[in-house]
Image (tube, rainbow, N blue to C red; front, side, top):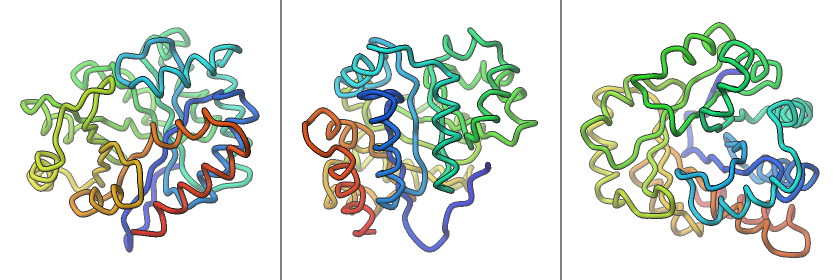
Amino acid sequence: MSFAFPKDRKLLCCGLVIGDPHIEGFEEAADAVARGGADVLEWILPIPEAAYHGRVMHRAANRALKEVVSLSDACAAAQRFRQKHATPIVLTSYYARVLVHGLDTFAQMVSDGGFAGVMVPDLPVEESQGLRDALEPHGISLVQSLGGDTARREKIAQAADGFIIWASHAGGDLVTSADEMARGIQELRRVTPLPIFAAAHVQSADDARKAWRFADGILVGSSVVWLIEGRGDVAERVYAFVQSLSDVR
């Protein structure tokens, strides 16, 4: 499934860790995110002590890894999700979890699961052609993420497919200010027509509104996953939060 984003509104992507707090609860949260109005979901395959993601995501990964969370589990969950929702899903995985299957097998499994895109935060764009070649026959985008490396932003943006994520934080630490992101997005318009999503530590509808002033979309991960740590009806909390963001665009 390829990306076909609506042209008449700002875009919303929400991230979840697969298997957090367990596979059934994760699927309920993913359903709530889709019902709340997200345009795309990021599903993160958990690994312990992931460098790219911050403390909230670390805790989520540790919760998820109390049970085995395999690529097969992720693909089966995606197939069930696709039976109810047309919302596209990006699978985020560290490269070690790709290589253990082999590039072609990984691409076939992801295709069978119905994922629209893949993101591999620890795979440099200069070394990504092999994975790109494996995904391309299946129509799966290799989504790229920008960060604090100003010298490589244009190269990464030119290699991107589907959409681009500009992360203001890495490992929980601020690497790019909102003002710098706003200026940089305007500069990248020269080299890419793709939507650019700002991962700008959005915690509220007001934060979302501010980020949407300079970005085509926003990626909200930690603030959604944090809601799963509480007690009570997690799905309804997630739904209410995502809907509150969706309503202000």
